Amino acid sequence: MEISIARMFWLGILVLMSGSILYATTGSRIQADTLNLTPQVGSHNAQQKKELVNYGARALIQWKKLNLNDGRFSYHRVATIQAAPWRFVEFGWWKNSLGLCSGTNTCAYIVYNAGGLDYSIAIPMTRADHTYAFQYNPNDGEYYFYLDDAYVWHQDANFLSGTRVAAGGEVGLGVEQMKDVHISNLLYIKNNAGVFSYQDWNGYVDYQQDAPYSNTDGGPNDFFDHGP
Amino acid sequence: MKVQLTAKSNQNQKLVLALFALAVVALLALGWTQMNATASEPAALDEATLTAKSISFAQKAGLKGMPKAQKSVKMTLGEWAKLGKGGLGTDAGKFGLTPTLPVFVMVMRGEVVPTAPIELPPDQPEPKYIAIVMVLNANTGAPITWGYADQGDKLPFDVP
Image (tube, rainbow over the protein chains, first blue to last red):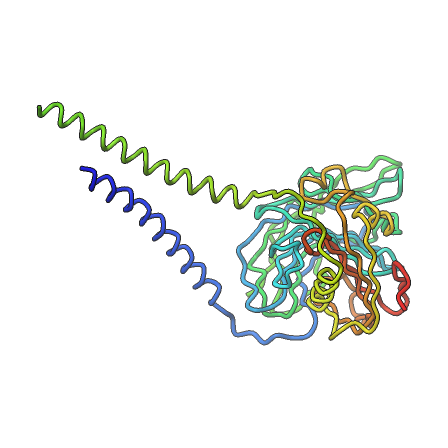
C-alpha cells in the first residue's frame, strides 16, 4: 500500500510537471509564430482623436497577449494634447522588448512634453485590464495621473487645457502586433465655469493611421487598435 | 477483518489526497510568493555598475554608441521629480515608487534616435535629439524614467 501512496504522489507531481511543460511549449509556439513583415524606421500609429478643449482624459485599456515579433514595443494610451505650442500628457499600457519597464516587459507608461524634453515614466503593474486617467488640477496647475483609482504621479506639463484628446496604439518598427487591444469607456474632462466633469467622447475621427495598422470601431466611446 | 481493511484503505486514500493537495498548495504558494516577492531593499549599487547600466539602457532607448559626454548625480526619486516640476502621488508606493527611493540620474550627450514611444506633432519631421537622461533605481539598477532632449532643450544639469 505504501508503494501505491508513493506512486500516486509522484503521479501528481508528474501531472503538474507535464502541465507546466505543455504550458511552456504552447507559449513557445505562440512566440515563434512570426509575421512576414519588414521592420521599418519610425513608429506606426493607429489613433483616433476629438478636437475640443479638455482638461484631461480617461480610458479603460484591455490587456492582450500580443506578440512583438522581434520588434520593439506595442503601446496603447489616451492623451491630452495642446497643438500649439506643442504640449501633451498621455498615459497607457506599454509592452516592450527594451527592458525599460523596471525589469518587466509590461508597465503603465506616462509620457509628457512640457516644452522641453520628452519624458517617460514607467510604472510596474500587474498584467490586467486597467483604467488610465489624468486630470488637470486648477489649484496647482498640474496634471494628476491615476492608474485605476490609485494616484501615482503629478506633473506640471506647462499647459492648462488641451485642444485635442487622442487615443490609440503605437508600435516601434511596424512588425509588432496591436491585436485589437480594446480602448473603451473613453472620457474627457470639461470645465464649465470652474466645475470640472467627465464627459463621454461620443464620437471620434481618424488621427494618425499608418498601415498596416488602423482602428476599428467599437462604439461612440470605444474602438480597437487593429494590427496584424 | 474485511471491514478493517476497507477502513484502512479509505484512510490511505484520504492520506494520498491530502498529500497531493498539500503538494499542489505548496507549489501554488511558492509560485505566488515568487510572483509577489517584495525583498527588503538591497544596498545601492556602486557607481561603476550604475553608470554601465545607464549607458546600456540609454542605448536600448536610442543612444547610438557611447555617450560623447556624461554626468551623473545621486538623489532621491522625490528630489528628481521635484527637479522636473512633478511629484509622486500618494499611492505610488503601491507600485514600488517612493519619494525616498535612491535614484541614479545620468545625462548623456550623443546621437539619439528614440526607440521608445514619444508623441510628435503630425506631419512634421522628427527632431534631432542630442542627449538622453536616464533615471535608475539606485538599489536595483532598473530604469524608472528617462527623457529625450533635442537641440533647444535645457538639460536638468550641465554636462561638459
